[in-house]
Image (tube, rainbow, N blue to C red; front, side, top):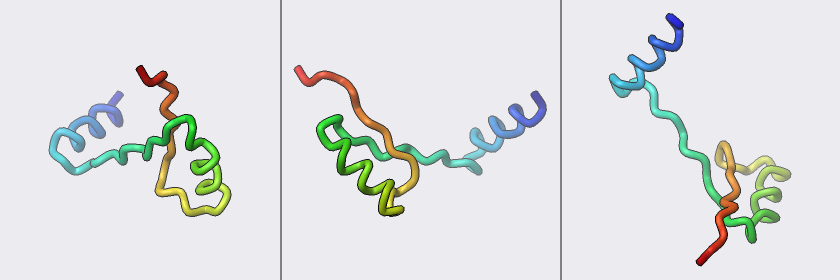
Length: 53
């Protein structure tokens, strides 16, 4: 709990800035996998599975 409180305090102070994953539409899944395979992915990748309306 102490470590969690410290991390939350650092975040509140702006000392921690979590990276937001790069999101790809499901139709671009092969592109995302290619970046992972090449080792050129910019951090974490996420697939957007929402259905367009």
